[in-house]
Length: 251
Image (cartoon, rainbow, N blue to C red):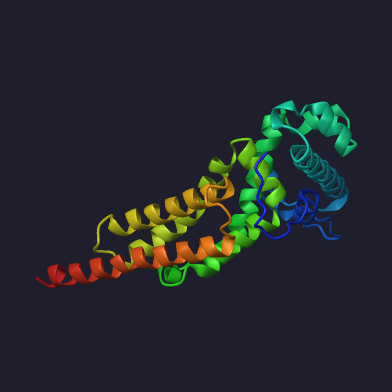
């Protein structure tokens, strides 16, 4: 198993998903999953209350199944985990599992979707036009998330799911940066978008290599400092490109 000894102590995967799906007393319980699972607010009246109760019960079951899966992933190879393992750990019956998912893979896919949504929501406020001048806030948030959830992230490495997860995160960031950078440099053709793709692809691959132990004892802070210098250096070419386009526009 991959050993990483240079990283800060992490939260357990159980705590991660307990926080992610923390039960509250209002009707916005598990809001992130609700957004995916429901299209309407429950109707008013007695029927609406029953629907809300059923919805809360369903969301609770999904939370328990996802938490059970993440705990099991930390204990055994993913391909050895069965529906029975999950329902036993979640203290639910198999019928409840199949009411929501067709397979362990489908549960895993939704678990990863939820994790992606959670990290994307955390990074989103930090995606701005100043990214190429000061990328450290976003990099630090990414590094903190990885370290805080290292038990699960390690298993993504072991089960070849790290690449798709990091790619999904970088794609979310790229969508916003593409729009912003085109507005910032409207006469620079595709070059600004190519810079975004180049930089974010590099961040994804660098984090992947770091998690696989390629960089030895390098800390996440050291990794982010290196990435920050590279991003600022590459980002400076955007201004040079924009300045070079200026005379052409005036000619």
